[in-house]
Length: 169
Image (cartoon, rainbow, N blue to C red; front, side, top):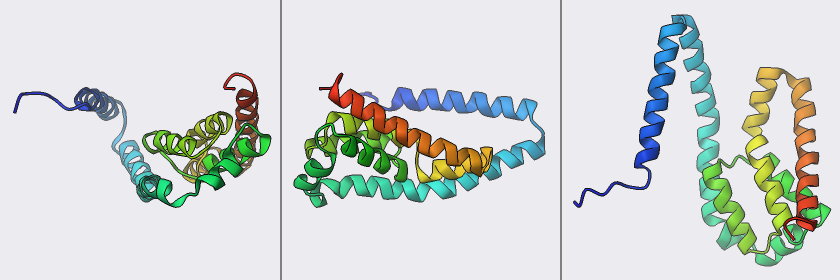
């Protein structure tokens, strides 16, 4: 062993320090009941998202082999309003963490996805997903979630369409 450390070494250290600070703060300032509630909510969220994350990683792994290039070019190619809207819907309905979303978009662009729709997918993927919808509805209420979701779909579509026809041309 030459003593070289992997590419994630510094990130793991930063994460561990951040976790230690957060836990220290929580145990110094929160009651036992508040910490218990925090842990229950965290566990609920992990149980909800982890299976979806695994499914997302699986889908990204097989998408290149199964998705026809002609379909991607037809439906997500170019910079049309329809392409940006469909990309936004894919982002809104899917749960792709950033670690899977970027490779997915890269793969789709290699199959013919336009730059505007790619931007639309990248914009809506993190802000919209089924688990995100549930969390927003749970925290802020169903009415606010019913405003938030369509607003991001419209904005993501417009930004992808405008950027695909101007800046990213």
